[in-house]
Image (cartoon, rainbow, N blue to C red; front, top):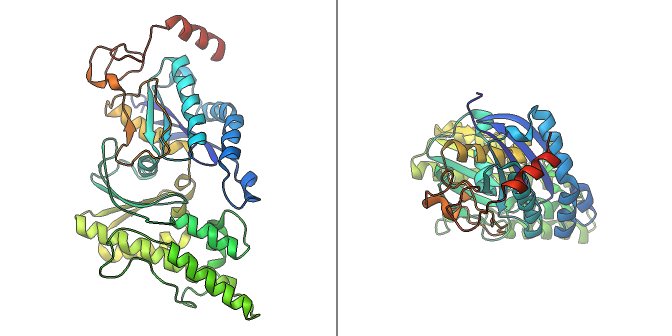
Length: 385
């Protein structure tokens, strides 16, 4: 285990400041500072509020993770950070912090993809990913089916949402039902006491002529909202638990149905589910049931690793180090629309071979690194013990 790469990961794509430390595929620390309570009164995430919260939480969260892991910052083999996709301002805070720490410590920097990180985090729970891996990622911003022959370099999108993501639909229906924000956990809880067959809500994009792997939850959201409105206009009580259960069933039915179809079509016998909605109990149960029937092995991380966290970024960063992937340059930037086909953002000096090592940000094989060893030493002496 001592020979495995020790990597710190920083995640700030939305409203949670996550810092994780991983050695190989072993999780040593997972520190999270959430600003969700600050957004609750607005009914959704406010980008500027999230960015300011990241600024305040960054250093204390990193220090907490290092203490939890029982390691020094000097011991790290690299620092990974979510470069995108996500909220531009929030991403920028994380990228800036990662660059500062990596520069001061003289460590390689890895800008990685948020979605690929959600897949790679399962290695911390169930060991190395099979190749290829079929992944269903479901969150407030993404509902995607991805085929990953190599999580560090080859991730292929098969399908995605064409409108509302699953998590976004949960939040909007919770708002209509006056259940607060975020909507996923409370709908999951109430649905356990309701009848999932009480109301036959529509299943989007499941017709024979519809795209096989794409998702659409906007029509479902509208149908549920109109059903609730009709009840209220008629002066009738809205059966909240039955609505929650029926809505949730419509979402997870479509998600699991399409995921199983993708596995069969691609000849893949493993399905990994990640993202915040993967914490939903009904999604996990129905996915297990359908995977068992299809002879597919289901891999779902524990709920805490499904939501945004630094551990998933560190996991992908450690895999980058293990496979000798090139590190990022110092001009690494936040990219709010970074495509999932880019699992990480390699440095331009990766092919030069003139640096200290391929892609190492302190090498001089590209035009972005400079000889500032005296600055490095001063920073280390001042910042780290």
